[in-house]
Image 1 (cartoon, rainbow, N blue to C red):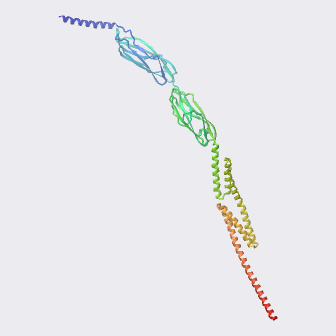
Image 2 (image 1 turned 180 degrees about the vertical axis):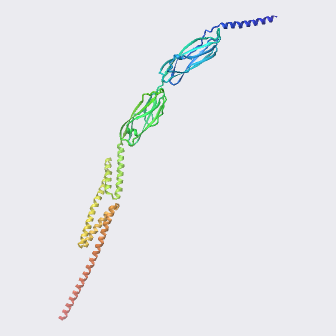
Image 3 (image 1 turned 120 degrees about the horizontal axis):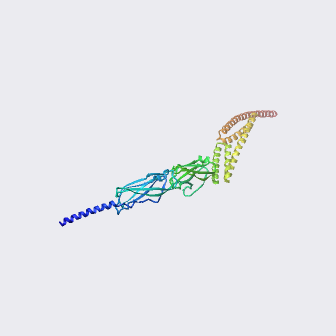
Amino acid sequence: MKSKIISIMFSLLIVTSIYINLTLADSRVPDKLPIVKVPPRGSAKLGENYTIEVTLTNPNEKDRVDIWKCWVEIEIDKIPEEYIEIIDGTKEITNFGSGEEIKLELIIRFKDNAPEGEYVIPIKVTGKWIACSGGCTPFQPQYKETKVSLTILKPMIIVYYLKNDYSIVENDYSIRGGGELEIPFSIKNVGTGTAFNISIKYDVDDELLANLESPEIPNELDASEIINEKLYLNTENMDYGDYSLTIRVEYFDLRNEKKPPFEKECSIHVLGPSEEEINQEKLNKAAAAERDAAILLSKDEFDSALEKYKEAKTLYEEVGITTKVSDMDSKINLVEETIQKIPRDTEKADQAFQDGEQEMNNGDYSEALEKMKDAKALYTSLFNLTKDNETYKNLYENKISDCEEKIQYLEEKINEEEDDTEVVELKTVFIAAIVLLLGALVFGIILIRRE
């Protein structure tokens, strides 16, 4: 009986406790709103999403009051919509337990036309309690704001010329005419943003531009990125002198706004040959002229050979090689003597031939024969001197042939004269012998008679 009484009393105690708790719960009014934290300020870049992190905490842990629903949103009507695009501007939370902490992310993006500067982003937090008298009622809204500084990334292109190892800045180049000049250069983006639609132009003289080979340049260049390239200038057909070359780079920023172009100038000197190179070229030309003269001389082209020897002599004089100058003088004299000898000896030979013909016509065959032999000797000498020249060769061959014909004729005539003379002499001797014989006979007869 006693135990039953204790059990009944314990049950009553539990029921009473539950009733009291329910009564107290109905009578509690939450006095702690959610704690809202947002970053006081941040930095955004044009063209990129910017995230605003919102931290919510339900501080009613002791009272065990849950939040049935909670909304976090950007107050759209209080931001400049012409500059800001809301990517994710509202977040909803359900059954936000007492003592719980939740992090939410709201996302915005600045439009391309947004000016650089600081923007205020207002945030509103609203919701409804779970345990509240008379049902779930909304709690008082809370307002927060965060400041965002918009940074506009701007490209800035610079150009500088370099030496071949890309390590030393240069702006003055020299090259001997006829060679190919390498002009290394770098294009660097020293700004904070990407450069778009890059184009490169070269402001130079038409003659220089026609001989300039330029590389392909990428269309975009990120911040801090650098391009190393080379220009090639062929000076083979260029005049000696000083030239100016300007590289001009044009580009645009993220908003497709054209930025001020960057220009960089350098000087190019196309040099003539050095004194050493000039002298070597003259020596080469002199040696070539000397070789040509020897070839022409071997063909008995004396006039052309003489001009080549004179050309070689002049070049050797300009270089100052006296030994070769003396050598050329000797060869020039020899050729000049040969050139003078040909008409002179030809004239002598022709005269001897004519004199021989005259003597022959006069019947003085012996004298004519000597003249013809003299003419043949001169023609033979001239033939041997000029036999490599077809014109001279044919001329003197014919002359020698004419002389030989005349010589043969004269020798025959002389032989005939000698035969006639011998007959006359024999006749004279015979007559003289007869006369002597007759004289001796008469003398003998006289002596006989005297006796």
